Amino acid sequence: MGFFLQTDRLVLRAFREDDVDDLLDLDNDPEVMRFLNGGLPKTREAMLAQSVPRFLRDYPCFGNRGFWVAEERVAGRFLGWFELRPVDDTSAAEVELGYRLGRTAWGRGYATEGALALVRKGFTELGVERVTAHTMTVNTRSRRVMEKTGLSYVRTFFEEWPETIEGSELGDVEYALTKADWAALNAWA
Image 1 (cartoon, rainbow, N blue to C red):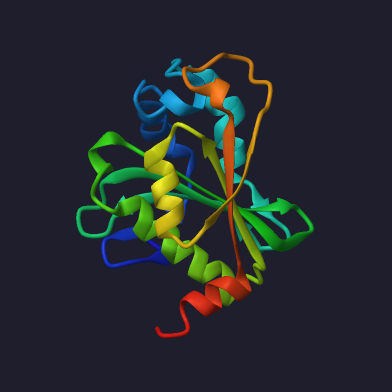
Image 2 (cartoon, rainbow, N blue to C red; image 1 turned 120 degrees about the horizontal axis):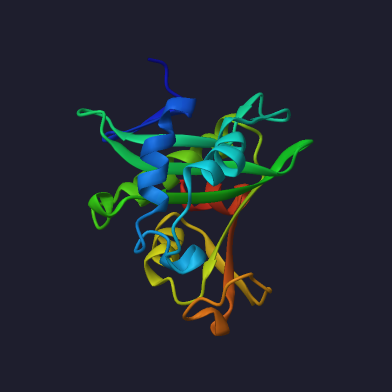
């Protein structure tokens, strides 16, 4: 099967409709969803109506998708997903980096490995000029992945969300990395 990106331990491939069961398991783990919706469960119907179409969508400015399934390279086990999707459908200049991995993948460096590879691909092959990422202020693990990927803190902001999540009173944070800063960080490589 073809893939979008491959690292030492990961394969990132396009979503398929038959990934819905793995996605449903991922989104129904309260710990995985803790900083996204407070751990509330998602129905199969909601997954099919809302999430799957977003994952299957092609972005005209990329000529491909902005979301990819993450699998272990050797075993082929579903780990979760990554995103590097354009903020504006007509331009690849600015993209949002994201990741959601199951608990069995936590603490093993998969998030950083996948994020680093996507950022590199974005800057070297996809015409990206700026990568952004967001998370809750209290989500220290995700913030650490952003920092290891080379992104820097930009700001703290507050949005209205449908559900109040523990820690939401501290707001969300934005991190970013420009192509010029990435090139400077990687000049030795």
